[in-house]
Length: 229
Figure: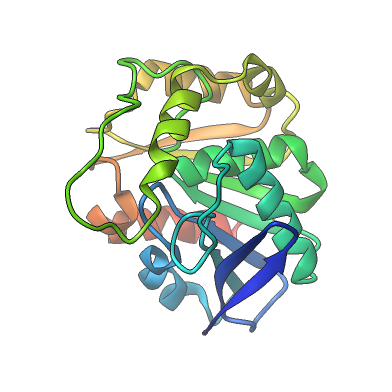
């Protein structure tokens, strides 16, 4: 697997790419504070069957630290990265914040999304309880902490259009939620009900299912990726 950067107008994104066995392509989008490295086990399991591309979102990994961390900008980054890499369509797996980015990406760029897998993705509804928009940890971080405030703001006060766009997502969507998740079950089920072609799977675990219960998580992925839909 190679680890390099794709240079887009205004930002450079790190990405890991198996460069083999595709199409089909599996695009992996990590959560807040993580990087493409979080998917190491998933990559090892599926690299012989699929071309796998794992992005570093702006402000994470080897990607540019920027002045803007708006979710629509991240959606644009994902779309432009696939275009730059010559990938017309992909199955997209997003975790947490990366799942919300993937969800908005499917709504805005449906022609680029084959199917969607959302791991512990927050629905585009006001966070309950509200996220703290001002906290800052001590010490050094390996991602840009300046992303925290804008992400929390967008979680607390999401654009109402984001919710309205969900009904237009036509690709198959699998929503994976942990039974001990901090994301409310009611809001997740509301999202599943709005999505046209979706199903909800709950696993015994918390927020980081792909690392907390990898065997169960990969069992779900096995079924999804084996389905030609």
